Amino acid sequence: METTDKIRVVEQYVEAFANHDMGIIRHMFAGNATVEDPLGTPAHEGLEAVCAFYEGAMKMNVTLALTGTPRCAGNAVAFPFQAKMANTVIDVIDVFEFNDEGKVVSMKAYWGPENMTS
Amino acid sequence: METTDKIRVVEQYVEAFANHDMGIIRHMFAGNATVEDPLGTPAHEGLEAVCAFYEGAMKMNVTLALTGTPRCAGNAVAFPFQAKMANTVIDVIDVFEFNDEGKVVSMKAYWGPENMTS
Image 1 (cartoon, each protein chain N blue to C red):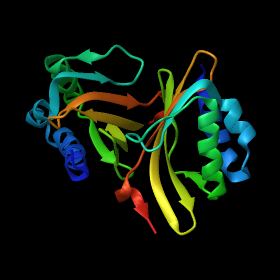
Image 2 (tube, each protein chain N blue to C red; image 1 turned 120 degrees about the vertical axis):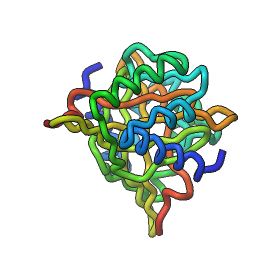
Image 3 (cartoon, helix red, strand yellow; image 1 turned 120 degrees about the horizontal axis):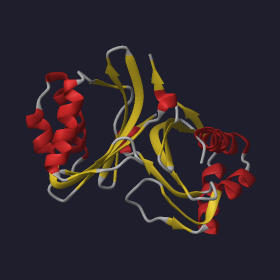
Image 4 (spheres, rainbow over the protein chains, first blue to last red; image 1 turned 180 degrees about the horizontal axis):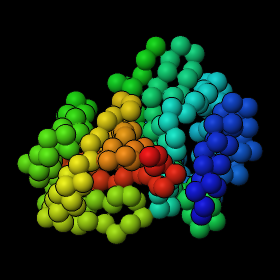
């Protein structure tokens, strides 16, 4: 998978939140995708569970703003961003792993209480 | 493992590069640690191989500067930084996973050619 394709997925992910576009989410994740947000909490397993998780986030009007350039390596991309909702901002790093079809098969979000400001 | 302990390890890691202090590196990694830098390249497996890798980096006078706050979640911490050497700067995200003894058992570095500037 080309670096430019990985970065495009990250950009579309930000766009999905901005526009409440679940079509992007449904298209970018693999059928067997897992999402841990944050890491250490029970994973959302499978595309339907993943989509349900993101629908919930979009109902909370979460928006994302990159705070650095995406870093591509191996089958993955890691990127730093701020998630903003109501009066709260969370500094997050997400790691996407891609399968051979270019779909995100694993998403892990790294953040904790100490990364939240309001 | 407490969040403050994870962040302290990140700070010591930066300090190790600044002071060419291999004692910090040897103390922070587990005996069975693996390092992939960048992800997708052959892993350095075991403490001696890990230390040999870092000794090489220190001979190149690499220094690290955090570019955002460490994000702790589950058994891990992810943090964005710049690695600087000679005239080159690389934007990197590292992910450390800790074992039950608080030692780093897995380090994965995310960066690629597009993250290098000179």
